Image (cartoon, rainbow, N blue to C red; front, side):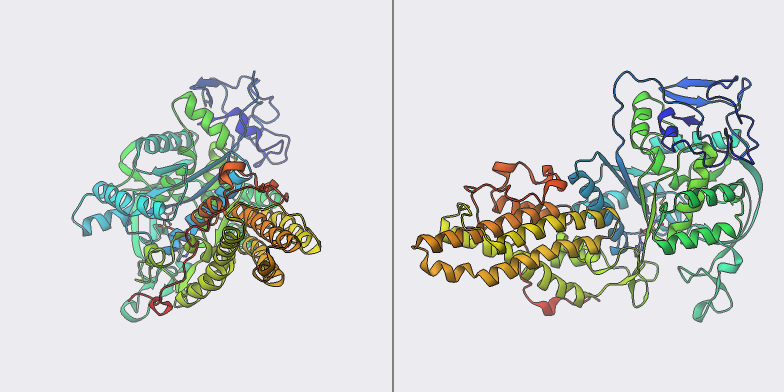
Length: 616
Ligand code: MSP
């Protein structure tokens, strides 16, 4: 297993699992041995360091972790900074995307755009999960091979939906790509060689929709068509009884290490409810995990036994690391890994929390790889009180919303209306109401009024503010305050609080315009005092719009791009996405003389709100 010097040091000086270390209870043979000393063999390959088992130096310790093994390799130049690395789940290609999938990906896109706008280096990964029985069965039902099915779904459905929502991912991984499959095999071989994988018999229930081995206690009694059967609590469909000889991963071995890790890093799983669920689950004791299947062959072959394919979750979770260079054969891949790993945020729905906060970190511990900094589990979009899903025929396609409201409104609505981390019911009426009051009347109309009045009274040339008083100061103060408040909230993944903070400025500017009524003052525009007053009001409002454009860029990329053009800001300040977020509240950046144009409406009024009903 390849272990990079620099990312190991990112765990700091504390040993997560108690190996190679001074901590009590460690039975690692490296204990107390100095890094790289004492006969440990480090075989250099492709710029990375591969710790071997032979040659008298077994770096695989009994509790599986390699923290504090080594020091960073001497560097002649300053190391490139680590990227803020965010992932979404990779989505199954058994079916087309619905708004539940889009919810996660949009949240990831907003957060990564936000960090970019802060001037940080960012890496944003999404992709598709293409192996396993569920995808295989879909393909068979459509009379094509699973690879043909996956290719079709990725090209015709998944990639287009992300384009339609302006998702600016840096990479898109497909688990059928060779860059992934060979790295999964190398990883698995490493665990096998280290003794963390063994052969055994799996007997028990399996939910194909979850692609998950279930504990009998988790299952519910079926009703209606499924009366007398045990059903999956998430999908409400009967589980299948499996009895297979498989390979097992020694998951149970890592329970204490995981508990210690989560104790030491209280924010590694959020929100609080998710953390509690994970801790409770681990405290019950972990069972070893079957990580291969032999009854079908749509998967990555187990490298030492080609009668078995790798369990789809074991394969899928590894995408987060293989996509950024884990087990890469070349120096470029290794460098990428060093600059990206560990993930800063794995964004997931709460349905797949345990995979990410129990199985995945245990796999990483077994390989001696630093653990992700945070797994954030958001809630479900509910329809009729239940998790919206294609299986239950409650899935709504994103286009059903974007065709009517536009992609920015989609991005805004879900993050504003639902507290991130909690469940939320989607409603067409609520979406329509928020669109009209917050986007069209609140923000869009503000921009239209300010640009139209600047055209009307100053031929579109932003005037100088020469009559600044307490009302203007209050706006500038609000702008400064909301930048800080929104930044704190969004970085904590509290999108709705962040948007509420930004909307304080929208409200303050609308209130300011109503109170100052520049259209009334302009009746005497020929008088210098009135002209100075109108100029000051319009400057203040336009500068406020500049702040809004920067702050809302990550949420509303299309509308804010139009606004940036309408403010004539680019010619003076450069591109919108190059505006540093931390500086957004500094008042007075839009220079007098900028050319404003009314342009098209940012959020056109809906033609007929009565059209906005759930399609059958
Ligand atoms: N392929 C696995 C993930 C592997 S990640 C290593 C998978 N795929 S999925 O297509 O079923 O997508 C699950 C994810 O889609 C959820 O975790 C969540 O992010 C999103 N959602 C699916 N339905 C959802 C809702 N009804 N509500 C909110 N999010 C939903 O699981």
